[in-house]
Length: 134
Image (cartoon, rainbow, N blue to C red; front, side, top):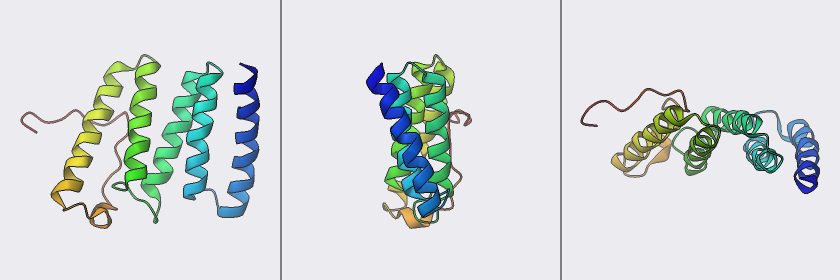
């Protein structure tokens, strides 16, 4: 637990520095938020970890450098689904995973051209379920 708390303090400091140096919406801030989520899990704070991961996902979705279809964004979406399941939000986790599959399908159908999908809406754990036959 102490290592988790120590790591959490380090990530808080890193987030402060990264936000000041690179701007509050940079991919570096998003990456640090995902690492902070890991530290929060280690401390037993799953709800806070889920919130940090969701914030990281939103930053990646809105990023001009990454966007909704970027592999790093899709990986963050998976992390949100994983944390939602760990927090007991099974239905939300399933919806997030379904949305992730839709996004991956769109990337593949676009020939893997993520830049064409960069403006696609980002789907988190509150996404709608898959339509029948999708």
